[in-house]
Length: 78
Image (tube, rainbow, N blue to C red; front, side, top):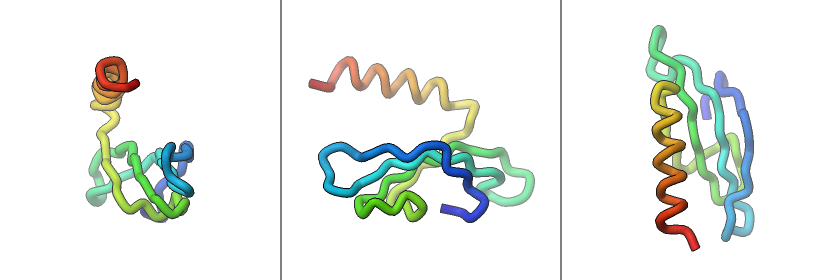
């Protein structure tokens, strides 16, 4: 995670021994003047600041992503 990232929340990753999901605010991720994003990272070793996988989601897309996640949960979770 970039040193300019601000951790918003760390969530335990279910079904792992130490995994974490990190949600962070990341300003100008693609250089000066680029729009800020929310960064969702996953680390299986419990190191929230060092995500092994990450997705950058523009704030303009956050509501649509939340709706898609809710839809997936309703349709496919146990």
